[in-house]
Image 1: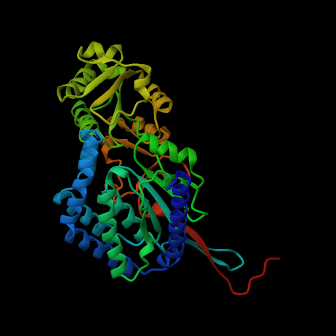
Image 2: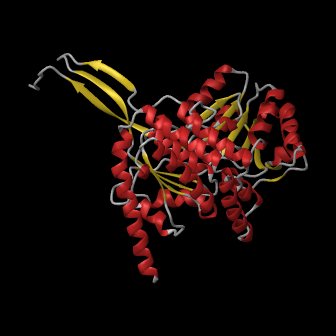
Length: 426
């Protein structure tokens, strides 16, 4: 098969997928809560029943990834065992247990002429999800879109192809059990990268929104090339600012958790800012707790003076998402300087202030323009599950429609229902 013929073949396959997704979206948007929940609980049961098959498929993916030189962190994201598969199944059940977001009455009001107007939540339509490595995203994204009444086209990473294929089969079995259209959840059947380009072009208008979930290069490509709206964040350059009025023990506990609980997630702290007014009492203990636990600290002169084990930070460090046991650290001249630094170098993802001063906390929460801002809490709470959304399909830092964790509510739009009694516009 020639390269051109192959490209044409992928284009035809993807256009067919788009057309079938659009056709199924209408039926899914009208599906009852009971039918959607039945599909999800049946899918969860299938995931459990087919766990040995999923583990075998995952072993193929892991073997190929190791041969390709995947890092230890990437292999961990890819790996599925019985415990993780149970977590995937339970996550699907948790989504089934959430309230149905479709049909929610968002607002109601009456005009002077007697027209009664309602704003009601509706599905988005067809969602395209492009992701890397983690095969559990297949279940999370498929289940979330289903519960929100959306058809979904899943394009998983090449490294998780076999694992995702088996999980997708379980989701389809759930749809079949509930008599819902099987094309409501489709997995792109090829690893050819041309399929991604076809999705970004919108599949003849059949994709309503794209959600990328993966590394910076993937998200940057999606944001650059997509011809449909995108829910995404490019980077998670997350700051923890320790104010002069911070309780030191609280600051140490929060910083340790924010940086080291899981270093490879987008809510992990990447930069520590310490108020100069607290540097003599707070800086050294904060830097020490990180260094003692094996975290590399790249700091300014004040940080290196506080602990000689710290190395010198470069200009690039302030705008680097490490996703590793590395953090940049800097002393700043109070709240305004901290917020200026965050505005200059941050990514509008998640930022935190640690302080006992309520006034400064309220200023930080009001003035820092990030999707998630926290006071006296770990940045690793930047997660849809922790917000009570069930699973999340990703985190968005844009300002249109969805911002922060993208869960069921964010996967809906709305329409207006207007009820009259013969009114005419003069």
